[in-house]
Length: 260
Image 1 (spheres, rainbow, N blue to C red):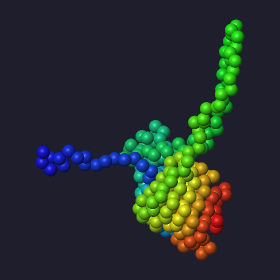
Image 2: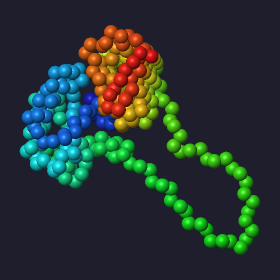
Image 3: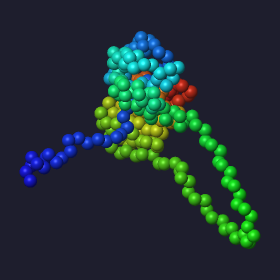
């Protein structure tokens, strides 16, 4: 078999699914011009975060779903601002039809995460007692309870530097990093993030909405920190935080930082 024929047997491309940093744009009212002005202001104030960032448009909070031409116009306003619309959020049948007409995908994970966090656990059902038996009851022996299936999962440990352009995601757990996070790198966790080195890129904790998550680092040089969708961008880091051990946490809707 020749080298040419061997090459023809190789796959042309490989598909992998992974965590991708998408911004969820929740539209609260239908105002295309107002939306364009707000997005331009965001891009101008924090280009490292917003310029050419992929955006998923969430229309679920509007009184009625807009028509195809209206949403196409919203996409155009988003592009004009400097962001890149890539699809719609939340997959109802009407939303799916709208996405198909626009030729874009539906990303359901944003809404699904919100609905899971809003749910309240159902009370345990009461089992029907068995009918009385005429046979003598067996002697009960104490047995240890089985281990809980919901036992907490340990943090995801990463010993290597996270270099510019790389993205690291800890799904369903904390992320523990023993080396630096370089400029242009991004670290994401559903839980908290611990950086035992310099944090120079972006750190996004509580990715699925956990407002109790925190961010800790030994040397603070971050481009951006975010917890449960609340973020702060640092074009210029305050002098009292630059290079210092820092923690970040949420107090209501405010993302706060202080030296450790």
